[in-house]
Amino acid sequence: MTSKREFIEKLRNSSLRPTKQRINICEVLFNRDETFHFTINDLFNLIKDKTGEKVSLATVYNTVHAFHKKGYLKEIPINSNQTYFDTNVTDHHHFFDVKEEKLIDLKNEDVGPIEIQKSIPGKKIKSVEVLVKLED
Amino acid sequence: MTSKREFIEKLRNSSLRPTKQRINICEVLFNRDETFHFTINDLFNLIKDKTGEKVSLATVYNTVHAFHKKGYLKEIPINSNQTYFDTNVTDHHHFFDVKEEKLIDLKNEDVGPIEIQKSIPGKKIKSVEVLVKLED
DNA sequence: ATCTTCTTTAGAATAATTATAAACAACGAA
DNA sequence: TTCGTTGTTTATAATTATTCTAAAGAAGAT
Image (cartoon, rainbow over all chains, first blue to last red; front, side, top):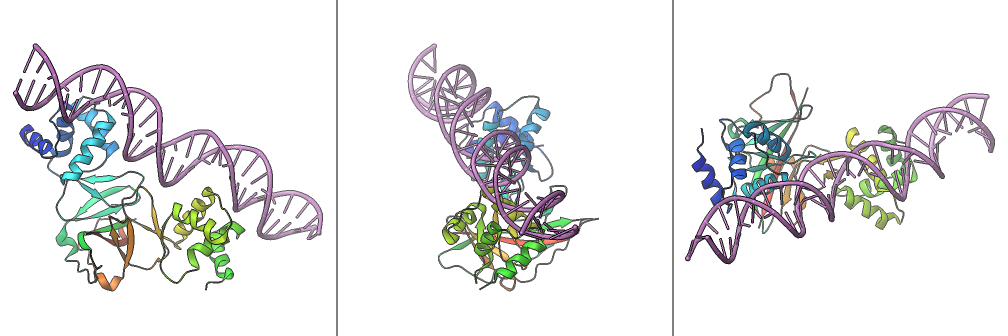
């Protein structure tokens, strides 16, 4: 159980005032034991369901983007009509079940070290992500 | 230099009749020495430039999707407002220069073998793709 | 309390993609 | 060839995710 105090801290760190709406967003995002993979639309609907209060779509977009920028959320590189985010911001990878459009975490140790033996002058590596697509 | 005969074969294999428009699309896609990374919009504009003939956007979408389905084009999993495709359909990976929005091929041997030590019951692995994001 | 600044919101704007349906072109059989 | 069938092209409309806008409301500092 994550406390409201922590939500407020996350919000302040992201240069956001702790409003009722944003706390509700935090409840859905961070008050859980497991990693949470979601689209903005998933989140938007869950807020209504879980808190009983409605938050406008624009606020959801704004807050998610601020958290992403601050590093409290990770964007998952996948081609889909909607953008997926992940509350697990540690270094890890994903399965994507193409048929069911479902993401599953892949721990770093389940993939093993990835050696990139090529470099681009003037550029450094920001992230290395593996996407494993699954079929039946 | 790829021949028109080859384009027609690709089209027929994809259950598409070889029309003037589709041949033009093939010219831009497959008549080149190097891998080609593109968005639909890139391709749409290049057709006008390279062949002098206009093809409607809908035809470009249809043809690209048919080639993708048949395996003549690969979709690159990356979060962008537009979908990226690749004419290199062999097993390989990508650098993505976030600042310049540019893709660079990463040969399979530049990454080394990737061992996925986890499996999902009832599902098999369709593809394993690495995306290396670059920053300055 | 009050003033300033930030936030929320509904709705409009934007942009990629997909659907539609009428005019047109490829195919195959006679 | 010619004709009939079936597939294709196209402009345009529809759809959908995301971003923008501007007015009303809430948070924070003094």
